[in-house]
Length: 125
Image (cartoon, rainbow, N blue to C red; front, top):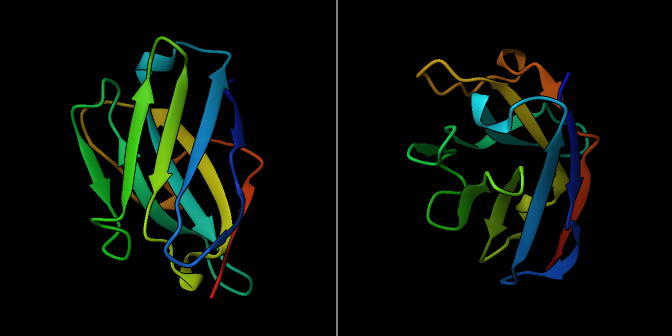
């Protein structure tokens, strides 16, 4: 089992920044690709970003490219999502997720085995 705990959410004005953290425990962190997803009220959970085991590969949803940056610190068993130039449409509950990495990055919710409890991000206009 992998346990994931997100933190760093909050209320921010449009144009502002937040950094989300996802602390992992339970298994060897470097065996897992780490993803971030988000779910706005009344909408499906959607892919935001993913990073490979040692950070060499990343991928982003088109809606966040150039504004969000995913990273990881394997010494701290933590993944991060730096969010800049936030927009009201970024308002959602943000979830981190993990899956064993075999060389392919995955973008679908169903491809991830482990999930955190989520952290709320609210961007005011």
